[in-house]
Length: 405
Image (cartoon, rainbow, N blue to C red; front, side, top):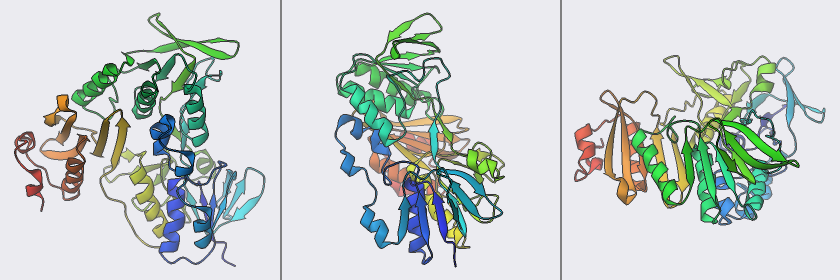
């Protein structure tokens, strides 16, 4: 009897693998294992509309249970996997039971990077990755008097924006000398610094957090190395994530900053694929790429489903991302790593502009703020390998879509 396909992780990547298997005609058993108590749900709203009460819990599920049942996808919740036996082709669940597989998809996602300070487990110290965590923050925001966010990345700034919109005093402590420095040009970082400060956020750059002040088990304040102290009864930690690759690594599957996969989402084991935040892809130039995005989860998952069925479906599209903060939607396409020139198009003062990133003469990425049309155009330019000249980009009177092939 066919052991069927087993998918570890019931997030977007895992769900997409399951549905893609059915879409490609696979008729065997498909089992989707989720370690949370919730059916697959949308994560992007958690740091945005959900905290504001604009997105209701009933809007978060991605698929109704009856739809999964109609596709003969068996969903097991509260079913974390503790071990993989590649030789026997079996996974062991946290409750000690085991499950055989013909093919295995690891979509184990990621977890929050912990704050390495005493007091990080105190009441009032939160992180945001899951629905339960988002619900805890939303509840805490109702009564919070002093909100502090550690980390000026996307999640931290989205939480800060939501807290300010709810009228809460907010301090953001960022260790770097500018916001989102890993992915944004200095001019775009400066725009977000001014945006948050204009909305009343006390945003502190170069802030090295050194101590958490805890009394009676509750967070009271955050101290920085320069001696400053910031009161906090709600502390949200957003200092990055860690891929959930430990079980795979323990099973002998190659891992390096994530589960190593190729362009078709195949791991080092011929019967195992992986997709989503837990993966690290070896690129043709020898570099490594690990992406945290909806698009990456979906496209890698489709490649993974094809690979399980012995088919080739490489994921080659330029990655794209987005972030909503206040009345500004940032849409990004491409990767800015290695850029040596940035050309601005539009006016930051009007909150409608784009930043075009170049490496030499080649366009490698575009950030668009409140410019959805320009974002879609940028995706087409990168997909076709087209690079407008910096002069063409800077000329707002030139319609860049005329350059498309």
